[in-house]
Length: 245
Image 1 (cartoon, rainbow, N blue to C red):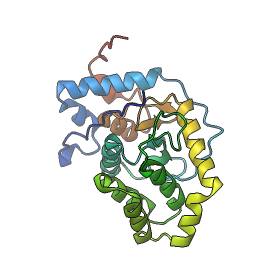
Image 2 (tube, rainbow, N blue to C red):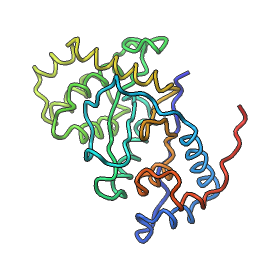
Image 3 (cartoon, rainbow, N blue to C red):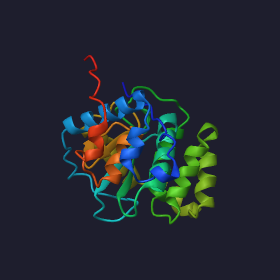
Image 4 (cartoon, one colour):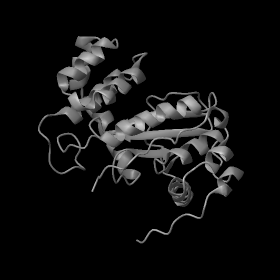
């Protein structure tokens, strides 16, 4: 169905709670605590995906960080924009060198994604994915990406191109890259990777090689605990809700 996955923001964390998962979990409203418990349970049950055919092209963060987050996004998906905001929040609360972020692309348009039926006809989603692939090596790529999502409602090819040039892209090189077979091949690789992970909607989030619901406190807890899903603070959560199949 490829329906978008809702992404909540992190709950308000008082300065004295920063980095203290026990205090954060203690302060959660019941619904949020239940969602965190559900996400943890889903991740524990998930299988590790064999990603050996999908080399890392770009990641933010230090090699060897204990938590690795891979995200598959569509430039026009509102939940992906929410997730981009959440990643910024997580970065602000995480200890140094505690996680990496690896962007991947899954445009929800049949024009460039054979998994999707139909096309919007405006080319924005496919162009947005290719433009990001072609600007990944810019020093300010992650700032560009943040601005693309922030301007989501007004995006078209011209706006995206102008933003890329403002962040340091070379016009001729970018135009050539957008048309290059290698760019299409990279996009197809990301789509194949997402398919292997059983994508049902965007954003698709992988944490240490397993699909993770984009539940803010679960992701934060894993980052604060070096990827330990059995960290003592998690034992304060209620049992996961039983969701009918």
